[in-house]
Amino acid sequence: MSTPLLRPSSLLLCLALVSCSVPETPSAANHAPPFNQLAVSGNACGPAALLNAFRYGDARWRELGAGLPGETDREQLSHVIRMYGLKPSGQLRGRTRWSRAGINVNDLTDLGNDLTATKFLPTLENEVLLPRSGETSAALLARVRGMLATSLGRGLPPVVSVRRQVLRNGGWFTVESHFITLLRVGSTNGTGLEIDYLDPWGGRRSSGSFRVSSESALGLEAVLPVTPVGKRLVRPGEKTLVTVSAAIGRW
Image 1 (cartoon, rainbow, N blue to C red):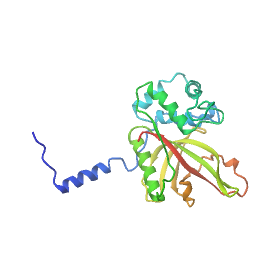
Image 2 (image 1 turned 45 degrees about the horizontal axis):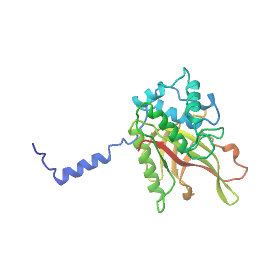
Image 3 (image 1 turned 30 degrees about the vertical axis):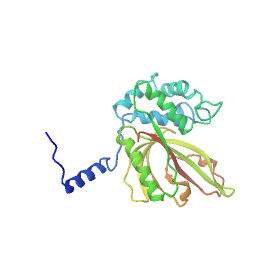
């Protein structure tokens, strides 16, 4: 049986519906208390944020997290760091993926994909969320929101890397990086979007926003009121802000 052709008006309506298929405010459910990196190390934010993404994801990702060896969060987080974090880094010669200095985005992605491969789950990807050549701040915000919402819509809360920047000696300098796990992203009006997130430092759930920064070359500013991200490293009188650096998820 042949399929009748859609009239132009019907086709436009269908396209509009498809373009709106991602919820206005995609969100993850709260299934359990979040992992607290401090149970293991002050520099375990990356693995803890990744395990929070699994714990707050859909059934497939929750099953992966729940199946990790260990009776407690501390034991599971320690297992992931020992088994997968201490493998050789794919980015830094002579280094392990995780060290007392933490872990970078690419190595955390590799660590995550070692875990997903054990359950034949989709491959994780990462993306730098800094401005592209010629990209306006509003376009950057829309791109970032679209990627984060896509991962949430596909059942995996994205892990986002943020950085504390200070204006020092005439240039912007990163003094500390941190990972958080997004649970909800709101719609954007071109200048910012509201978020709910998990901070592995203390295992807290909180709200904040990503917004267009006056320092457009640095990308989006992350406003995270209860997440200090290296604030102690800022010298008196220095200009500082936290920026959105990269994300790991399913696009």
